[in-house]
Image 1 (cartoon, rainbow, N blue to C red):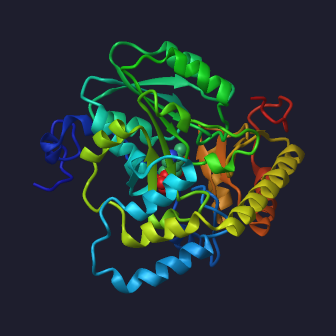
Image 2 (image 1 turned 120 degrees about the vertical axis):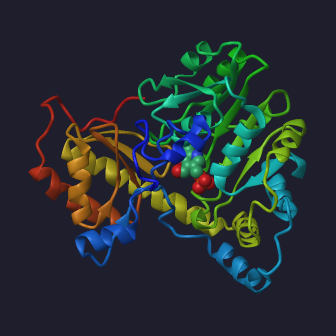
Length: 385
Ligand SMILES: Cc1ncc(COP(=O)(O)O)c(C=O)c1O
């Protein structure tokens, strides 16, 4: 019998062998691959603005450092990555034993769930937010409690109100993916006062370096409570392809996370590149400049086009086409631009280089001339948050 036979309504008989918790999972869908679009539309050049990568490219210091270790990759990495942890500790004002590394923030989040969440526990997260939170909840056999965003932002009061005696973990993406909105220090402070000690709070700060409106300090909470800060080298440092992220937490929390970490989970190249990127001030300046100028440009264009958008604290913008987003996405593909359609009429668009941003707007103008609008309400506003 083939794996694709239908048995008792399941796509394959092997479903009976599976951990029942994983059966309802819809696998995480990443941005459409460039090679696929190239083949489908016969295009040579494709611009991917779908996965929030850094338009400035990787940190040049990171590139130099990783080249220097290529001839040593027959050796396992130093397990735990103490040099990188020391570098991060200096930068963040903590000790190396307050840090755990992971194969991207994605794995760090998974380690947190493995370490703390049991079947039957409740895991609170927002919608729309990073889909991996809900997938992790499903994988662990927990009950996902989903709290809708309010005005495109985490509704921390409603999230705190959703806590029960079964709640084990709350995920807060700050800034949020896909809306780019942030919750500020005062809101976080009030929220944490409402969270009891039996609940772990994981602040996913994958885009925190892009926040310019306010300096947010969540590290100060890790000394007093089960708070974990998750960060990544994928976004701002431009090392998404290397897969490396980290968490900061109190020492006793890190000891528990270490129990759930696979051996040698970060590579020697990712460790040295990440460490070198910490000192790359030029790359940091260039990234801020590119992303901030790109956002200003896109906001002005969206206003002209009559499209509502959420002012973003990250390197992407959430825009509402007020028309079915899927045909717009497909039409943009034929022009060589990959964006990320979501929530029926919206899309998340990563800030690119100036040329990529203007190219996208030219294509979008052409596509929207053809696309029917879903309603005639006033448009072109920055969505108030
Ligand atoms: C909020 C958020 N957290 C984590 C990640 C994953 O980061 P990493 O590449 O380090 O796994 C993403 C990537 O899109 C994200 O948007």
